[in-house]
Structure formats: structure tokens, C-alpha cells
Length: 309
Ligand code: MTE
Image (tube, rainbow, N blue to C red; front, side):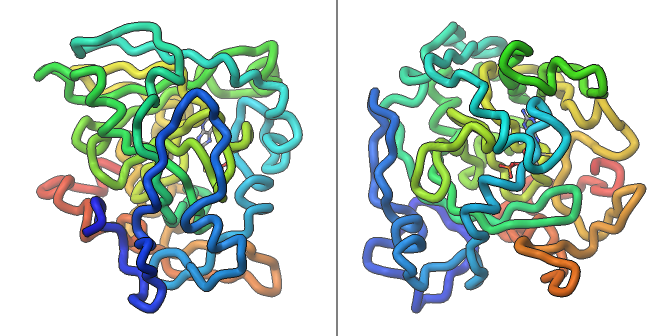
């Protein structure tokens, strides 16, 4: 049995290696990820596909059409400028309600944890979407290392703040109060679908996608998936999150993909699956919880999702 239940893949696609969970690999000091599992099959022109048989978004789009405002406002800015960010050495500061706070080397934080292939739909709040073959570590496994106490109800994440290497942080036009911060309720963070991605398409995560590691929460809008994380803090109270601070009427804390709750300036009922062009928009209906409702809807039982958007 696979350890995690991800949305159905046609049984014809499931190989003996398991399409859900790749061969187990252990992250050591050397960070280069060999091509393996889903990504290798995809690159080999195999018929392996995403959830419900959806095609993978081409690698050039996944790594070339990005939001990473630390490097500029245009979708092509991250791919152009993110190489200016130094990702080795990388440290992670852990604080708050846990038994093992500290200032850790990134290698120590992830050492020995399993990297798995996870092909997820990725839905941006701007109403485009992709299907992305990530290589990731279960966030629950990461957080467990720090032994959260009974008072930890939320987790806050912070991105690197290094204006010398991040031109967007130097820009006078930026309306964002750096560093970028995000948060999850602890049960969302510990959910088996939630990962820290360390690779995409079978390679180390490129800087523009949030090297060396970034959050991926597939049932939430993309802005929750904070990149290049340097701080993890366990809190009693709901943490602040950058887009809510920047435009509170437009972006909430939960940010669950929900076709019934429109953005104040546009509908969230449909999305453009990339690649999408004027003449071939590739538009499709947006699914509640981005299609992961069976796995995650119970986390929000009894909550008014219009109010908690
Ligand atoms: N993380 C940081 N630090 N800075 C950002 O600007 N943008 C977010 C999210 N994480 C962002 C970030 C948004 S709006 C989206 S849609 C996704 O990253 C985009 O991820 P991708 O470029 O890997 O597709």
C-alpha cells in the first residue's frame, strides 16, 4: 500500500514501482537528485500523467513562468534573476512552541528523510493552473523532528530576506513588507498531502521555484506555497501571511481553492491550465479544494468557508 492517498490515477498508469510514491531515496550531504520515479518516466516520454490522467505542465513553463516577487513582478523575472540568490550554505531557524528550537544547517534538517514524487495540481489565485511533478519531503516528518508542544496550534514560515541578492526586496515599487511570511494551522501542516518540495521534474529545485526547499499545499492557492524557507516557528496564535497583510480584502489566511468564493476582482470558478493561449485558452472548471476534497474537506468541517477564505 502506498503510504499516502493521492487523487486517483487510472489503474493502467500504475506500475509495479507505484505511481503514487516513488522509490525511496535518502537525502544526504550531496544534494543532487537523480532522475527517478515519475519524473524520469515523464521525461522518457512515458504515459505517466497527473491526477485523473491530466497532462504534466511542461518543465519549461513550471520553471519559466513564476511568481517570486523577491525577484520582480513579471512572470519571467524569477527565472532571469533568481540565480543571484545564494542557496548553499542554507540555514533554518526553528523557534516557538517546540522542544528542539535552534539554528540548524539545512542538510541536518532534512537528513535521512524520504524524498517522494508527488504530482499535484497547482492552482494560482490568478486563475491559472499547472500539474507539477514535485520531489518532496512530508512536512509532518520535518516538523516532528522539532517536537512541537501541546501549545503549538499553527506554524509560521519565513522566506530569506537578503536585499543584496533579491532585487525585488530593493525595489521602491514593492508593496510587500519583506520578508515574505506564510502560515498553516498545525493540522494542515501535518496533513499527508503537505510537502516541502526539494526538487521538480527530477532535478534539484531551481532557485526560481524556491530553492533549496519550499512549501507545497496542493488544495490551497499557490501563494500559500512559500519559497526558500529560512524560518519555521510554532505558534499558539494564527500567524500573519504576506498577501493577507498586503490586501486583506482579497486574500485570507486559509486560501483554500474554492470555485464558489470569487476574488473581489475576478471569478475563481474556472482556471486556465498552462500552456494556455488566446486562441487555445485551455480553460477548465476549478474544483473544490483543487480536487483534493476527499482528503482534506474534513479539516474544515463546520467552518464558514466564505468567511474564512
Ligand atoms: N514565496 C515567496 N517567498 N515569494 C513569492 O512571491 N509567490 C507565491 C508562492 N510562493 C511567492 C512565494 C505565489 S503567488 C505563487 S502562485 C507560487 O509561489 C508560485 O510558485 P511557482 O513559481 O513555483 O509556480
